[in-house]
Image 1 (cartoon, rainbow, N blue to C red):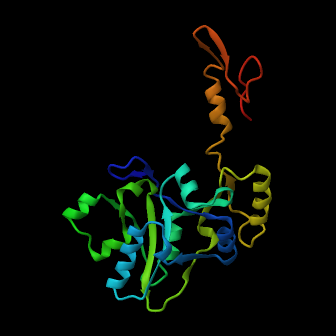
Image 2 (tube, rainbow, N blue to C red):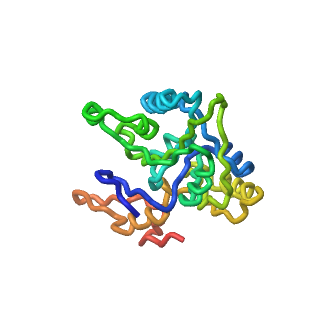
Image 3 (cartoon, helix red, strand yellow):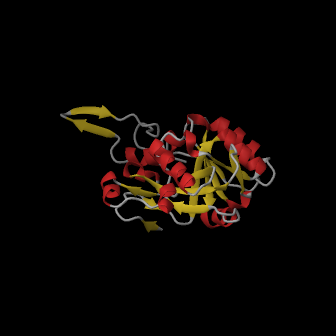
Length: 244
């Protein structure tokens, strides 16, 4: 494990994640290809401006990127980078993903660097820095990016060969009903090469152990002499029972 200087979140060095939605996960598992897309439609116009400027300065007609993260699971990632109950996180072995990515001629695979506006006023970015530069307000994303811009033909996307052996595990969003998750999990396991992939559902917002540890502290509170009972699904009337 390693920490970025001045950052609040730990950056993991052995895996890297891609947040996306179920249709794109199925497309990837069936084709074993990850799409790199044009940044023209990105929500962060500062970011897309820099990466498109980089391609223009390099005299390339197109640029494509794939955005990943080195950060551990956060509520922010689920809400911003996925669509509710269809959201998924594909966790890759970082060394394997980079090994396959580097087979693409001219690809760059680097961490995004986060800067304040005041820092850029003092030291303007170089051409090579442009594709991996974002404002510091986005720093909790801990983004890692793949960029290709040496194509002289405009395409909707380019596709990167990425066998399922590069996958560490697949995590489904915490809003997907458990019964639906089990059915989809079985469907994914039937896809060629996917039987042994670990597939789980996030408990970020509804974790039995977290709740049981909290109610063990004191299931009945005293406030100004008034007895207040805490609603706890694991309370059996006299004590908290352990979560299975």
